[in-house]
Structure formats: structure tokens, C-alpha cells
Amino acid sequence: MSIATRPLALTINGQQHGPIEVPVELMMLDYLHEYANLTGTRFGCGQGMCRACTVIVDQDDGSSHEMRTCITGAHYFNGRRIRTVEGHAQRDEDGEVLALAPIQQSFLEHYSFQCSYCAPGFVNAATVLIERLQREPVARDQLEDTISDALNDHICRCTGYVRYLAAVRDTILSTPGLVKEA
Image (cartoon, rainbow, N blue to C red; front, top):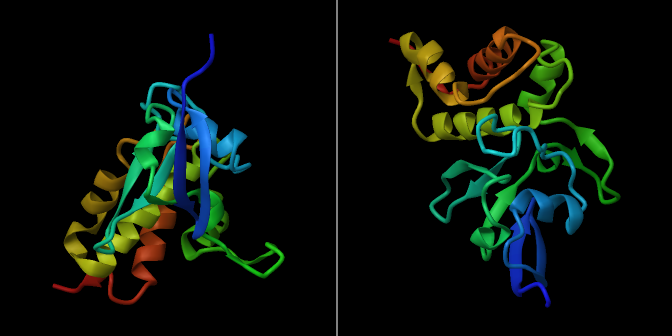
């Protein structure tokens, strides 16, 4: 008996991966860890509830959305472009980090995590929110609800969320054009 495979090709953090034969039943989280050597995406609950395994899927129209990888098969991503937490920082030709993305830097400045297990999912959710606000700014009086809605489904067992929310709020408020004044 052999394991059924199928070719998979996708773009991860701007780099083409594949085509490579991978098991038909392989979850994307396992592909990222075992085939792409990208271990920043976390396995939390294994049921898609905690969202530690979230990656960003980039659409052709310039929009993006979150996708849970512990419950989504790798082949769903065939031909798609995704970003993992490793893809946010600016790097040099050798792959060394030159600068963190603003949301990553803000998370550090606000001490927004303790064990950091949920941090990749929160970074990706906040990034999707910020990118959405670049296209569709939010009114200042709706900012708190907008942030809460964007991060609501992400579960953290350590921090109580206050620091995550503060980091996202400060990043949005310090980025021109994301908030409309009334």
C-alpha cells in the first residue's frame, strides 16, 4: 500500500515552491514545517479554533484573508500566494532580518506575548486588518470595534489580549491613512 500523492506548487513569502509531490491528505501546516522548513506557523489546537496556525492568502485583486492551516489541506493552496509570519520582516540577500514589520515591532514594544504560541496568528490577523484599512479606512469612533472584530477569533492563553489590542491600535493610529477623522 502506498500513500497517494499529487503535485503542489505555490508561492510562499514571495518565493515559488514546487511543483513537488506531496501526500493528498497533508495539511498545509505540515507542508510548511516539513517541506518548506517554515516553522513560525504554530500548531495549537489542531481543530482550527485557536488560529495559531493562520497564514495570509493573497488574492489577485490585492486583497488578502486569513486561512487556518491545521485544518486545510496543502492542495487547497495549489497555485496560490501565501505569507507566513516569516515573510513580514525586511531581509537582506542572505536572509538576515534588517527590520521587523511595523506590527511585529509594535508587538515587541508592547510586550504583547508571553509564550508566543499565538503570536504568528495575531501578527497575520493584524496584517490583514491593516491592509484592509489601507483600502478602506475606518472612522475613528469605529476603530476599537474594528480591531476587536479582526482579532476576536484568535485565542491567547497567556496575556489577556490587552497588549495585542494596544499594539494593533497604536500601529493603526501611527500609520497615515488608516483612520478617518469624523
